[in-house]
Image (cartoon, rainbow, N blue to C red; front, side, top):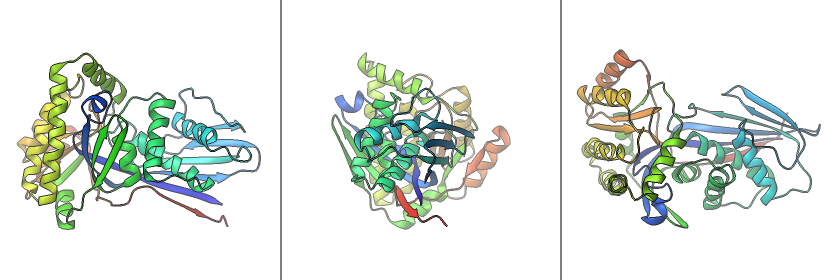
Length: 344
């Protein structure tokens, strides 16, 4: 038998950072994001030799262990181990399984598209398919969050796990002990136009989001007024984006993105830097009306809204000056998918 899963990566459109504790627990957060046609994949193939093999195909990393119900978390393939350890703890099977787990992600780690959380969801989904675990969508997303943030102590927010699990365009609300996912029914022609006009540009840099997120969290605890006010504005931005998309006011998207970006930079140090600011200004000079860094900041992908026929001129200007690449994508409505096939 072969067990497979895939979960989509996401573009954060508005409100990014307000899903991170302690802000979300004290003030409540709000996010608008959309899943795209880039995925994290997981495949499980049972073995019969008492071994456990973990393989990250895109990172060209693999480890083989003796059969065990708990694998040591030591900095190597920790997401793979963390999901396996939690499944064995919460849903112990009749006997310890022997298997190979293969993963692949369509975007590099640190790119700002939620790769780590999406991969966690994909791995968890594969185990849920294999063992027929009784996990609904909210259960799946919540458990993936617990594995990353509590079991593995990885800094970050909550939006990525829910986006990967549910899929589609969602307005998400985050409170202390509650997450509400509100799917948005947006006309297909609006989404097609958005995909055409919203350039996804890879800066060919990566970043470690943990330090940025830790600084952001500290700013809330230390009652840094500028940082907290910036988060309030980003929560406001998510409502602005929601209304613009539902009503088809796409000409406002660039302005709303720019509004959020100017405030996001005040949430924590290192969200932007001179290189990112220069890229942003180059895109604006070439015809973009707004944009932002994807994810926590510091590098990775950026998005720019390019109305009318400015898309190509913006891409050309960015590639001429900085290299990098513009990634084609479509929005997708489905979240996590799992399936099994008999091995021939």
